[in-house]
Image (cartoon, rainbow over all chains, first blue to last red; front, side, top):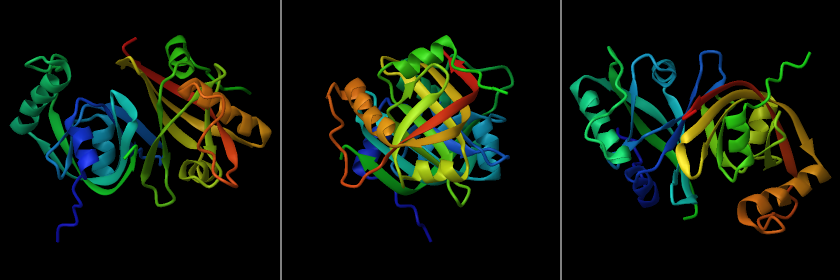
Length: 136
Length: 136
């Protein structure tokens, strides 16, 4: 059964826009961790492109629960916070191509300029479970 | 022994500036929670003004560990993330006056306009333990 509630109009626009999101995960010792990310959506899932071995990748492999906050770069009072979980981690060519799409969206460059040798990109597919908004 | 590492120059400027911060805490069920906040600093501690009973207040009463991200509203690539803990929660007149200071800083208004009847403001005093920066 698909419980995915998808993104409402306000949230979808925020994730489609050139806005930063802040993703919180839980560390092995139970403490919280938060990082700023570039972000994408297909309207149903929130997509975060990270690299294998980074804290948010290993944390969500162990415990998929995340919280995400995003706001409009031009109006920070237009924001939503989302509770959800990482339902899939996708490596390979889709993830490698997707980071170029993100670089294009956020910087205008055709290719992501900060690739490190041996780095494996990975898509974290986040299913939203609860959405709360401000400035609606 | 005071382990407080204080804030470095980049972090201090970001917290003194009219910038939003994102504070992550851990819920009772172990899932992460993140909220956008107005923020203040005395250079040593990060100060967040919230209200008694709100999730981040009750969460940090139970588990004081937090993660904080803040970025420059005019240049989102100038940002820091901080791992720390809430070492004190202060209620009373200092907290009630402080929310007006925050309203002044962020909105230019002399008094905080969103006070709710019976609301008790509280200062979360966050001791930074580790600071990581981007755009340094």
